Amino acid sequence: MVLACDQDLDKIVCCGWPESIANASDCTMVKAATTDERIQMLRQVAKSCDGQYRGNLARRQLETLTPEKA
Image (cartoon, rainbow, N blue to C red; front, side, top):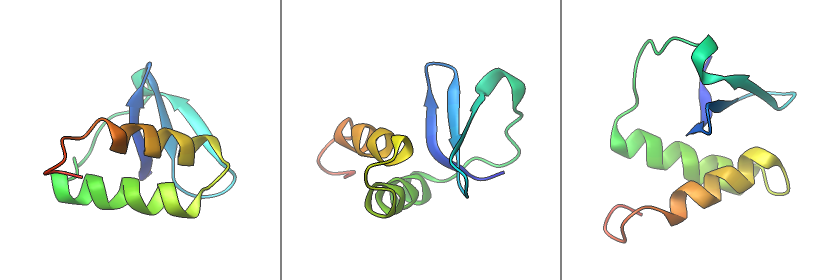
């Protein structure tokens, strides 16, 4: 599974349809994204999932980045 958004309050949001949320404690990380890959995915999700929970979560996570990383 590919994550659409980072872990938030022990929840992760998966890519794909329908929008789905899982407990992070029920998942095992196989490969972590690089910082650049993470930011690119968050931007893509924020843009393409407007009005959905995962789009809002991605925008909120992007807002927490330092200006040089955003």
